[in-house]
Image (cartoon, rainbow, N blue to C red; front, side, top):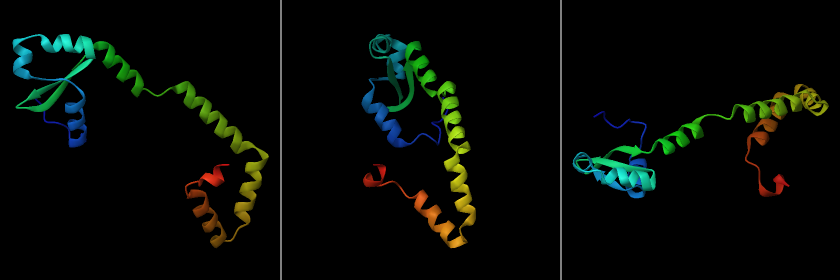
Length: 124
């Protein structure tokens, strides 16, 4: 069995062990209780030497996860088109003219102000 990836943190593994039912690989091999639990809950953690080693899940749950990880290209296209339209407007052109007219210290201050997180009052 492959080692757990270095990108998976121990807190993620602990969360899985806490949130999903757990069965040892020996129990899985000797019985089908885990399969019934997968059918009822969608997934179980399979342990090896009392440590989470893998997740057994239903096809439906796998497909849901797979779909959730795929970007919504239509939504991204709309966001890009909206951003592009804003960049082409008169207000954007004026802002660029103003930016090019600033000296370097004023431009730096404007950049810092624009990068700062918005406060509740400024969200309006």
